[in-house]
Length: 66
Image (tube, rainbow, N blue to C red):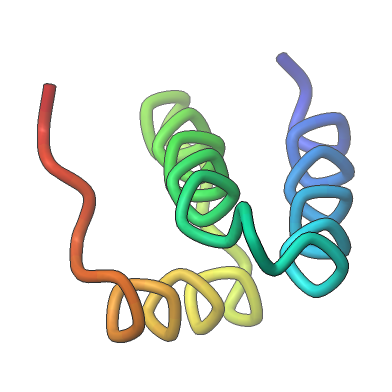
């Protein structure tokens, strides 16, 4: 999947994170998964998205590895 597509999906999830408060934990997990896809393709995670991931980990804890 292309970098721009993944970034757009992450931004869409971020918007949902603010709108769907009852699903915040699940959305945070999905954001983490998308960022993991970027890393798996040896792509750098933009600073703003890395900061978002850190904030979500502080709020919900690090996702469990499958």
